[in-house]
Amino acid sequence: MFRQKTGSVVCASCGSLVGVNDDRCYTCGRRNPGLWGFGPVLRRFGNDMGFVQLVISGCLVMYAISLVLTIVLGQSVMSTSMFNLLGPSGAAAFILGASGAEPVFFYGRWWTVLSAGWLHGGALHIFFNLMWIRQLGPVVADIFGAGRMIIIYTIACAAGFFLSSLTGYYLPGVPFIGGGQLTLGASAPIFGLLGALVHYGRRGGSSLIRTEAWGYAVSIFIFGLIMPGVDNSAHAGGFIGGYLASMWLDPLKRERMDHFVGAVICLVLTFAAIAASLATLLPSVLRAVFRN
Image 1 (cartoon, rainbow, N blue to C red):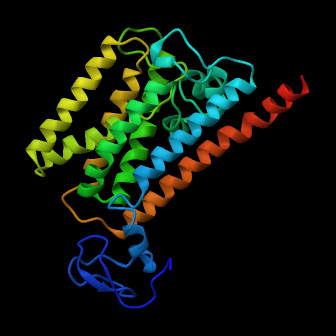
Image 2 (image 1 turned 90 degrees about the horizontal axis):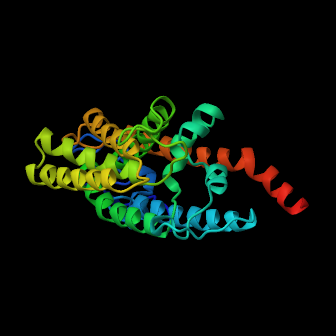
């Protein structure tokens, strides 16, 4: 049974018992606390309502597709760099929706600021990013709620890759600052989750969480300054985007129904961005490959 039509359910915001068809929670005032009867099913996926698993699964699927496409294009997935080992070629990444100065400013593929966060450049790249998502996602969902977490993740992804594309176009080659000509990875939204946790601590939620989040963010950022090929602009933009999104959403207030609506819009826009990348180039490329 996917939808409960009668009986009681737990309010998605405050956890109080409410009728499945109640218009408003009598404890916290949330509208439609039973989520149209789908609340019990969604709760089975955890407090994040399955978003963390969706991101992990989606990134793994896109990573596999990128490797297959690289091979179809007659290119190698091997690399002399350990961090790019078993990674897609630049052409495959571009087709699937990598962002950066080149796609955004030279080809007008502005939607890639949303799709690039689901692509990765190698086995180690995706391993560490998914590990961070698995660690940070449930924490942010517990504090902000699933709807606001999805909004934060999406805003941070767009902000990170927009700043990276911007600095890559106007400040190419500048050490530690210049963004990417072609960039991808979930690290931008990961920094957004850290930025949201830092703001939550500063807002009065928990100084311990703020300290831990700052520690993680600074450590990863310093690592990015030391290691070559790391997109520090995407990290900075993602952190700023997550922090500002947290300020806007206010983590100390209860999650509202419009946050879930916003989360659905974010998911639709993200999937549309991935579809747009595939639809604009992939068919013609595959036709050319198989014709040869």
